[in-house]
Image 1 (cartoon, rainbow, N blue to C red):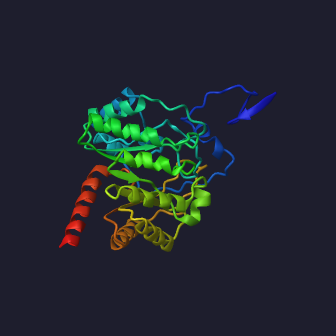
Image 2: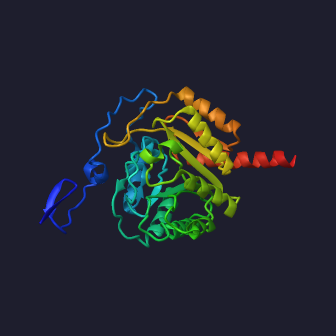
Image 3: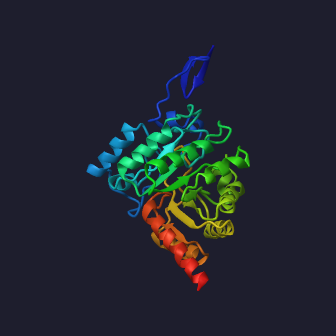
Length: 334
């Protein structure tokens, strides 16, 4: 008896090796989708190819420690610039996600078991890179009872032991299938910044982020502040997916109601024809307008440019974020 797996005719029960370097291997769940045209990128989107000694050094350290980075897996346009400066966003818990969001280029499927030695390898890489600020993210792990919360906590603690002066920013899943204790485990590990992206406006969730729920993600961010007000909270959205300005402004209001400190807004870029189509390329002037509006609503820090991504310039932004909080507190006392 035969069956078809990712287009291959195999005996029932037989396993085949996935090639995550090709779209049909990375995204079998998208194979049935019709192709969306990929419009030509405007001049303000284009970036230089990654080169240079710094880039090669970062690449070597990542490979030496067998680490996965979201820079590579998600096809970030800023990878060349960041890696040349020794900055890379570590992606823990494997390279295969249990979700199939239509905007994301990370592979979808059944992940491998967790590697108990990964937190130590991440900490070693952070130390060798000499990072003052590190960003750690992960795939969604809906297959785990705690969604990977303890693995996040172990990674934070391992970095603290090796590099006590390094500030730590985490970009987490939504833990939607876990009990409330999962978030508490992560918060109790005391990251400096807790980031969870809303990704888009609520009206687009069914087509862009079908496995998630807008108000659950919003509540997650609010709960972090309730558990530990000293932790900075951060969230971001993409534009160019089909949203309008009023919906973006409403998301800003929702984030501020949840006491989110830092907002990022960037242009959505379509990874393959099978992914969600680009509705439009938002002009830099419109991003500047969003930034002005967000600061007016009370965010401590805003990054809104076409190439803004969650961890882009994260170290510099963290310093500015901390300074903004100190200025605000000083003004209140005065």
